[in-house]
Image (cartoon, rainbow, N blue to C red):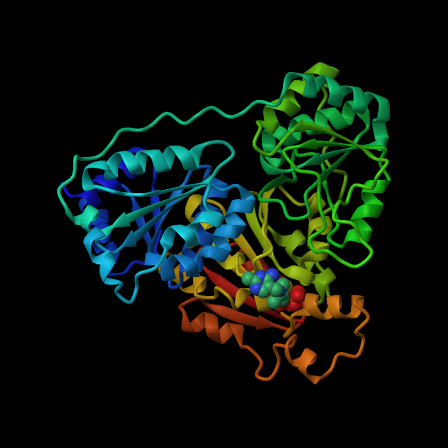
Length: 514
Ligand SMILES: Cc1ncc(C[n+]2csc(CCOP(=O)(O)OP(=O)(O)O)c2C)c(N)n1
């Protein structure tokens, strides 16, 4: 058995089910091995950012790694932005990057590059296969590294001679190191703060604390102590609706975030770092928790926050679930399309158990509040600020959860970075409704210019923040990649088409003209 087959068989035996791939000549033994060894679905992405973003969405929803298969340094580099987002989401991923044959590197052929240096900033674990005899065990190590709580990006560089040469065969699963627990005294200290501050305390949730287990425990703590529940501005995954307690989201702009957090006497962190501003602005600090507000850490992001929340609830004698949100689902909106009517339309029509991938940027803001009373659903956000994550991440979520409807709520400017994902939606017939917010601009940058006092941008500043001239026709782009699409101009039309799309299966796109 050659090295490539050992790698694939080791991954399959380790529980890997999917490989998001964009291969080249140095990965062809692995491409052939995907056929030789059963068990791993091969999904082609037409740009590496689609593959890495899909692996992120898959990891967030499946809680286990997919493989990406990428072509040397340049192919990997095309995938880095979405690996950056995945690292922020703490998603488990195993990147497999083919490299030149070990003896060919000295020739400095055109595609030769320093892959490890490109991989380092986005990888929690990197290894270069040195021999075909070691490729199985190296793959098992990569899986164990990626699977370590809460999730890591492991990058395995596989020279092509190590893939095609005779190997020692597949390796067995390597035990994954157990998660770190929160320190014992964190429970007592957090309980003391919550008891003393009551409603003046914010329980700030991030990482895996916003999954069902953590949230339900947080809800019990809120019901007992009166504390406020809040999550990070851009959470990797939040379970919402149904029995989940309502969780507010930290506002984006620092002045608003500082004001909201300043209403508390103390903040207890569970699975989250103390929040910092997205950017540095003149006259604003990096830290968003104002001085004078006490900060207590129940569990760091690398620690088992859900278990710590359960232990804290127990310690406080908090046995009663938080009452479900009393928020009502909005009625069907009418009139022109704007962030409010769009948010209401999605909240009114989204089906139970759907997954919403929100990269809708400024158009998306009202949706989180509007959907407080929506049926149970999972919410995914752009974690690392590197735009172009939404359509790929929705791809991976749909592959991980084939029985759940995925709504890709997508800003137009961000969508253009990785629109090739639509082709994968069609190729794999994924159950994804893409909702494009066609506002023909980089609106957030126009808002930021105005905030910086540039209220009359010049010709070049206008050109660099406008997507008009020529206008982008998303429905034609989608149809050209095999995704049925419509364009809507009113809230009534949006409701009619979205109502239909959520009942049908398969990919579709609705282009919303703002
Ligand atoms: C990879 C990457 N490139 C560039 C940026 C800078 N950037 C942030 S938001 C944005 C434009 C967003 O426009 P759009 O997605 O259309 O949303 P809107 O602001 O119009 O709501 C840009 C270019 C970024 N965050 N990430």
